[in-house]
Length: 241
Image 1 (cartoon, rainbow, N blue to C red):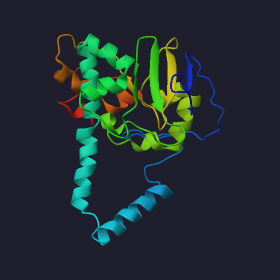
Image 2 (image 1 turned 60 degrees about the vertical axis):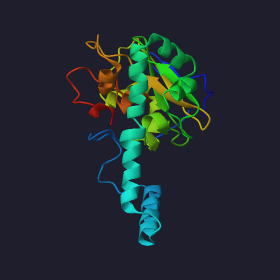
Image 3 (image 1 turned 135 degrees about the vertical axis):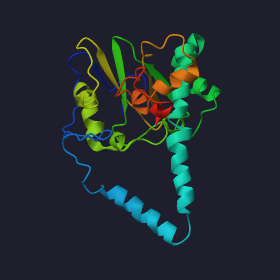
């Protein structure tokens, strides 16, 4: 894994190679990407987890309803809505933004968002000239406390390999087309350090409160594969899901 202070790869028109040879493709939303298909059987780890879950339910060791509540909590309450609150505050509070970029762990903790998966945080600011994207090349390290459960595509081998060697191509598959002169920096999360992207505030949101701005912040924008939503493209607070 990369040093926590250095991106795994960066570049404008071309990103540096990472030294791996992997197949292409990953899932995103309801779209189909090269090399995988939603009708494919789940990978072996997923099958083992499902079998273990079924066994625990069968033996009465876990309550299926309680499990669903736990999953819903991580998906819609613990994150990524928490991350959206952090981003929206940074957009409206310059002092907090400075603190967040200087010491993400402390700033996020001050809002009450802590957890074993998000105690050591660094926040990366997207600008008109630099675009950051996050990956974990060796496993699936992810800041659960602010982003909730990691999406399936984030944990997939194709995303973990290709976003380092071809970040511009992967971003394009998410519909994110960046000008050639924008530098793309790929950051490799580790067990000691998690990363979160501070997306650019969308235009047309001047005068909006932090609470209103939360609706434009999505999980994908905080990973860096998409920009924040634009006004008129979201309904209520569903964007953060």
